[in-house]
Amino acid sequence: MSTLSGEHVSADQYIRRSPLYRRHQTAGAQFEDRAGALSVATYDSLNNDVLQAGHLGLTDLSTLIRVGFKGAATPDWLEKHDIQLPEAPNRAEPQADGSLVARLSQEEHLILPDVSMNSKLANKLQAGWSLDSTDKVYLLPRHDSHCWLALTGKLTSEALAKVCGVDMRLHKFINGDIAQTSLARVNAIIVRHDLGGTPCFYILSDVSSAEFLWDGLLDAMQEFEGSAVGTAALEKLAKIN
Image 1 (cartoon, rainbow, N blue to C red):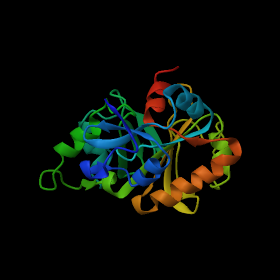
Image 2: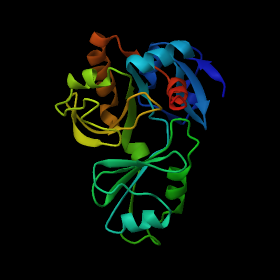
Image 3: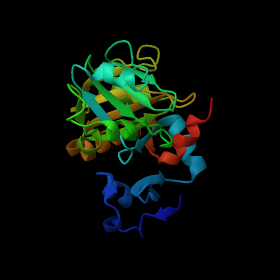
Image 4: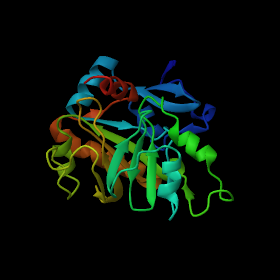
């Protein structure tokens, strides 16, 4: 994938781009064309981004495909597609292809791809669903309704403690846990999904709150020398045990 300078990329060339695009462009991020979407590749050099992400980094994943399903028949329908469902609500379960299935209630589920977008489960399920043929299973277009951020690094819990009332210390909020709560005064879904050996918290919130949430998290991270990083750093961290 070619990497593009933030100064020279025209937003008009891309139908799909993050609601935080202007924030990234102003900060001098390097972009890449990923499946027709304008994504942030790096903020600094890749090596520096990886070091920052391991310490405390914030990444915008809003251009990655994601989808939700809700309804009384949803668990059975997903299991028919060979999906390993979490046993209880507010838990997330990795899938064989690298996707993550988050169970938000008995009937509502969220499907997220891996950060490299090698997993195709979200696309497959969305393409295979129709209102006419899938009774009591309703599509939730989370790609349109929710922004998606990732907070990574050894100091994630300390930063989250400044903006969230839920105890997210790493020994309390374990890998796979989900909290549906207020974060920086914004309603959010928080999913812990570590990348290799690096703590990672996925954060999804209403797309209209994206800029407010992004700014609030960066402000909370300043005390701990945290900053924004690109998706390439997360891809590399995911490969490190």
